[in-house]
Amino acid sequence: MEGKAITLFPAIRDKRKETRKPSNHKELRDFLDARVELYNRPEFIGSDPVSIPHRFTEKEDIEISGFLAATIAWGNRVSILRSADRMMCIMGNSPYDFILNHTDEDLRGIERVIHRTFNAEDFIYFIEALKFIYNDYGGMEGIFTRYQTDSSLQLAIHEFRELFFRLPHNRRTAKHVSDPFKGSAAKKINMFLRWMVRNDGRGVDFGLWKSIPPSVLSCPLDVHSGNVARKFGLLTRKQNDSKALAELDGHLREMDKEDPVKYDFALFGLGAFEGY
Image (cartoon, rainbow, N blue to C red):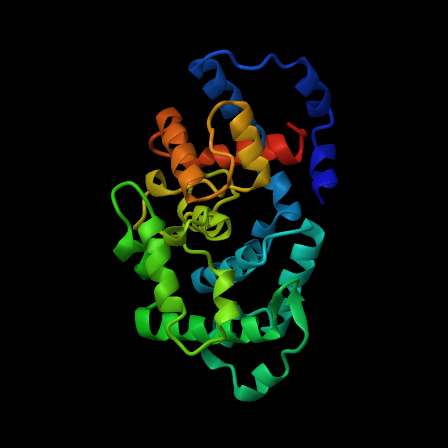
């Protein structure tokens, strides 16, 4: 899937060798802004987990499919999309209706591993927990809105996770939603939040959640974005954890305080597609 994305812009691989490393803050910002323009476009949707929620038009279907796709977004991208597609098929490609109206018989039909360590038991719990969230709290958006701060959604992620795992569950299932208050960079849920909140008119992120400004989003820090950030001096901490995320967020907010997480497109693209 990554190879497919690269072939859309074959010349970029050669340009990498010709590009002089930015020598100051303005050059770095201009360089990353150019990469945002390159990778923040619909041509890349098909090879990305964000393609799963792009199948739907209703707000709740987009939220639920996006949350589930982001939850399993680790490992091979082809495998991620295949596993996410299986989840959508199990839910009859109507995730919101399935969440609210599934029967015990529907759940008994869910078997086997869904994706790597995310198994049938985990998926069934997520279905029940999402039903609880939508019935008792009106959905996910309101929880994140309530607990956002002026500069971050990390508290909101923590509080959402506390509510999400309020029902009886296997302890191991809780590992599938990370907690920044326990030192995690929470890459997958920060990616989901980017999808839901950002709306720059480019057709990739959805901008469904109007009550949260893009300025409080955090970069979905992973191996690719972390390695590139270190090469450009945006990150000094070696681990990709919550402290590293705070450091990276600080630098990205200096470059664009209103939409700092747009640089996720540049950092990830440089690492995944250009081999930086």
